[in-house]
Every structure is written in structure tokens, then in C-alpha cells.
Length: 114
Length: 112
Image 1: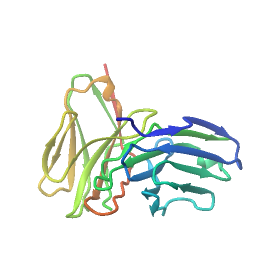
Image 2: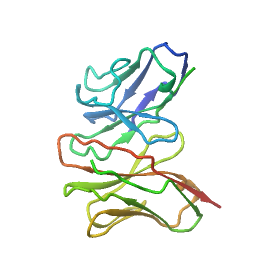
Image 3: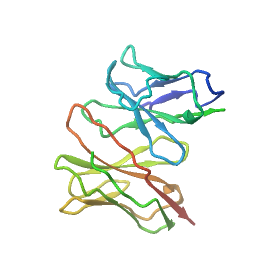
Image 4: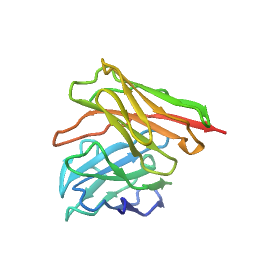
């Protein structure tokens, strides 16, 4: 079974630029999550989708972050404009609707904002 | 969501048993205890989950006392490859919306 795929794996940008991350969840997983993990901290949930609907985006900085999952499968997370404090690893995870405590994480995208 | 407290770091040697204890004094009746493992440069990985008493799988054991205010993740005979960060999470399942809240975790270093 293929795991959660993410791209790119690494990205370096300058502040005020925009960046986008892509995630392809495990086939059949209706629930998709984006996390931000700052160095030395645990992952922090940014947004959770169930199919193509948002169920929680309470910790998403909506003035600069946006995410979509138009067809209920792949998802993209965008930052525009980026700030220095956005430097982190962005993790995508997916799970079955009826087993959300078991989440499968991708390898993450490491973002460095200069 | 119940708050969890676990040691920041632990050191061990190959072949030893490692026990990581997590405190969750405000755990609710419907809350389960879940542990994740994260290797460097990888996303977290589900290890084990339990509600009470003892749960064992091929990776670890989870001990939960009767009052459920703490839990202990036990890793038998660790190897160098068990060096990772271990997260204890507490949350309600069997609802339409499950939110995992990660703390800073316990950084386990296994030495030869």
C-alpha cells in the first residue's frame, strides 16, 4: 500500500514570496490533515478536511495560509506571503473517517524562509 | 482535550527496556491514550493505543493504571533504531471529529 506522498521535499524562499505544497493521501482515506512542525516542537494541526470539506481550520493563519482539496483526494497548502517564522516542516497526514486516531503521515516538506 | 506531561528526554543503552511515562490527570471518561513515534526527518508513526489495563503489540506495550491518570509506554530491548521522539496523546475517539494534539514529546536516545 502506497503511503502519503508529499512534494516538494525541500523549499527555500525569501520572505514575502509565495509557496505551495502538495499532498496525495492514502487511497480511500477521506480525512486529510496538514500540520506545521517547528524545530523542537510537536506537530500542530493547521487544517483538517473530510472529503473536500473543512472540519477544522481554527489554527490556520488565514491571512496568509490557504488550503484546498477540491476533488476530495489531493490537497494543496499555500502560503502567501511567507514570513520568517513560517520556516518549519509541513506534514500531511490522512486517515479513515472511522479511525481518525490512527493517522498516516507523509515525509513532510521542509520550508526555509530567508 | 486533556493535557499531557512527559519527560523531555531519556537516555538508554541497546538491549535495555525503556519505560516512558505520560501524565494526564484530566483524562475524560471517553478519552483514549495514543502514542506516536517520530524518527528524524520523518512524519510521526502510530505505535499503540489503549483505554485501560495493558495493551501489547509487536512494537511496544502500554500500561494504564485503574485511575487512568497516567500511562507508560514500554519498549522491550531497545536498539539504536529506536532513537526517536515519542509523543503521548489523549483524546476522544468514536466521534465524527478526532483532533490529535501533540506536545513536545520525549526524545529517546539509545546508545551502543
